[in-house]
Every structure is written in structure tokens, then in C-alpha cells.
Image 1: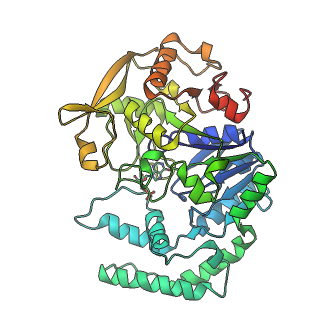
Image 2: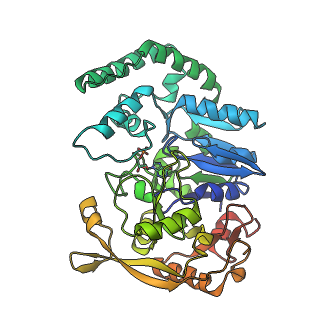
Image 3: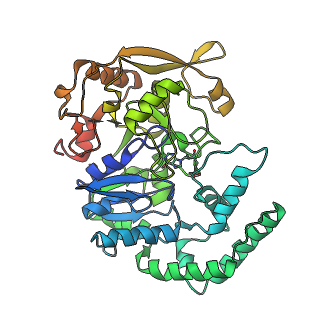
Length: 437
Ligand code: IMP
């Protein structure tokens, strides 16, 4: 098996960063296929902490990192990350490729986002305020500027002026005070284009070549399935396809070449930003999970909403992505609890439903049905094998596995690499080539 997708099975922040970092060692290439610098992956190499929001973290392990066409790129942020990596001794020039078809975020995208999030009478999504959505809007409206344009000094000024003029009209219409100096922005972006030009290429061809050479390719999703623009809790979603299908469109990679999909899920649930969250815990319960799990955003620092593992939700995200295996993270966060709730069904309009409703209105009306399992109240932080886990923790995991219908291939019990249990004989270990950490 060589080409594997790993992505979030919930609302993002499932602890993908650690799993991707762990798995990257077994792959030759790591690829991002959607989103932008709204994602934040925290990776430790020794004592050193890195927060990467655009560059696939596999680069820290000497792997080839690819930023696919499905991303929206803030070039200033990309350059900042490149400089941080270079300062840490990483050979970025030899290990990073950026798609010429990825779209470029400009300062006016943030302005548009502020406008739409702040407008009276409009429901705020609680975005990361990075200009992600408005940049995707321009992409779909067929007026966006791509990396191939950014690095073309002859073509950029005209494309930029046309787009900037659109935004100026919009700003005037909405009575926006904020003045943007378009000439200065153009100058700045010409500079970014010069700096990034050597890294920009046709990554679709590059991936096809790497595949022909038999290289092992890992695709890392950003955000999570429930934030997917098509399948998530619309409109409280991000603007890209975070699901496995996003790999095909966002990296130009054929579905027939994908060998497996791993879904990452916490042993409980969290969500940042607004929107439905059927298994959200009441404040006191949520506080206990939040404090034990350090549930504060990597990118925005916002406290995350916390709740219980949601079986119907995972069944839904498994159906969309075709998970071969689940990587369960942060089991240790539940160590201290006397009892643990699991949402096993949704009650809506007096009956228990199996399917995820399409509208937020119905989702807000869902009443979760809980089953309560006994806590193990023992530290799992030192467990290194399935058999090291307390009996009740194993029962909890088996319960999740049986109800979701997806095997659990790994269990994470702490932030360190070695605090990861790879389950022998699982499909996950088959996909990644063994249980060695
Ligand atoms: P946007 O991606 O900035 O447009 O934000 C849309 C929604 O997705 C908001 O609810 C954000 O909080 C959420 N979101 C975006 N990126 C992430 C992420 O990496 N983890 C978790 N939530 C995210």
C-alpha cells in the first residue's frame, strides 16, 4: 500500500498533526490538498515546538512537502513559515513544491470576511478571519488570482487591478472605512511572487511522476469532515472539501490511486466556532474535558466547545470518506472521569433517526441519546500496547468500534510520539507498514 489519506473525522483539531508527523516517516511525500492557514498543526521535534499552518509538517522529517492546487495561500504567511523552517536548518528549497494552480489570498479578502461576519442580521460563522472563504469565493466566481499569476510579473498587475477594483466597489457599497493602499499591496505581492517563484510548479504532474516512481504518498486533510463545504454542518463550515474526495480535486490525484483512508477522531468531541454540535456537554462537564485536554485553538487561541463522542456523526463521516480505520486521539483526557457518555443516537421530532439531518435548523433540534460507560480512573499515559490499557478503557474503545462499524487502528494517550498504541493486525498498521513507532 502506498498512497494514504489521513483526515479529520469530526470538526477539526482531532490531533491530526501528531498522527501525520508519526506517519510521515513511513512515506516519501506529504501533501496538503485543501484549506489554507486556517489550519494549525503543532509538531514537536525533540524539545522544539513548531506550528505549521500551510507547509505539510512532513518537511520536518526530511520528506518532500507538496501544497496542492486546492489550497488558498497567503504568501506572506507562507514566506514566514519558510523562513522559520530555514532558520531551523530545514532545506526548504529542496523539499517544498507549491502548486501553480493554488489561489492567492490578498488583504482585501480579510476585509470582505470582516464585512460579512460583522454585518447586522447575518449569522456569523465564527471563522478564523484569515480571508479563506472570500478567496475561495473569488476562485469559484472565476476571478481569482493563482500562484502562476503571482509569479508572473507581466500578468499580475492587470489581474490584480481588476480584482482590487471589485473589492473597492464592494467596500464603498458597504460603507467600509478601512482604506487599502492597492498600489502598495501590488508592490508587496510582486515581491512575494519573486521570493516564491522557485517553489511554484505543476504539482499535479509532479505527483503523477512520483506515483510512477512508486513513491509512498500521504495526503493530510485540514479541518475535518463536519467542516466540509458540501457535507458539513452548512453554513457553519469552511469553504473547501476537507473530505477524502478533496484529494482528487485538490491535488489532481486519481481516486483509483488511493489505497486507504484513515479517519482521526478524539475519544470525545470538540468544535470551534459557531454551529450545531449535538453531543456538546453542559458547561461544567465541558470545562472538565477542556481543562484536561488543553482545548484551546492552535491558530486563534479560542476555547473549544467540548462534548462526548458522537456515534451517528462518525458513522456519517465514515460513510463519506470510506474510513479503513480510525485513529483515536487523546484517550488520556478521559482518565479522570467517573463515567463517560457516548452519544449513540439522535432524537428528532419524537423519533430516533439514523441519518445526519441536512439543515442546521434540524441539527439544533436534535436531542442526543446517551449511553453511559464507566470511567477507568487510572492514568493511561504510560500505556504502550493495547494490553497495557485498563480493562474499562478497552471496553470503551471496543464499544466505539462496534457502534461506529470502523476498526480502531491506533490510540493516542499523550502528546509524545511514543504515547501512541498501534493496534497489531489492524488495517491501519497494514496501510502504514507495521507497528514500529
Ligand atoms: P474559516 O475556515 O476561517 O472560513 O472558518 C470556518 C469555520 O471552520 C469556523 O467555524 C472555524 O472555526 C472552523 N475552522 C477553520 N479551520 C479550522 C481548523 O483547523 N480546526 C478547527 N476548526 C477550523
